[in-house]
Image (cartoon, rainbow, N blue to C red; front, side, top):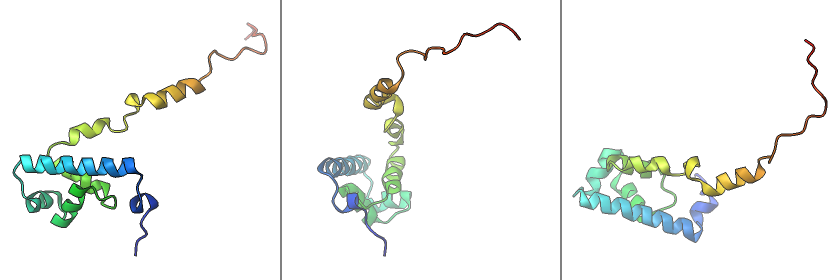
Length: 114
């Protein structure tokens, strides 16, 4: 029997809410396309029960299933910006704070003899 991680058992509220919103967005996209659960699940290669878990935001459902649903709904393009380092303002600020302000001073004089 596989062990369930702590975050899957009891995710922080923000994670739980994000998963629920993500699942609801996938469900809305499916319904707008007039796809039955069985139809979308078949296209992804999962069961309709797993798709129901995705749509309810179940934290133990594999991320590949969520991403597969986006692919099948032609919504995968937006995933390119998820965790994009160029959009990580906090990470860039931390990196700048750690960077030295100036180049280190030379400790000895260079000579021109080769």
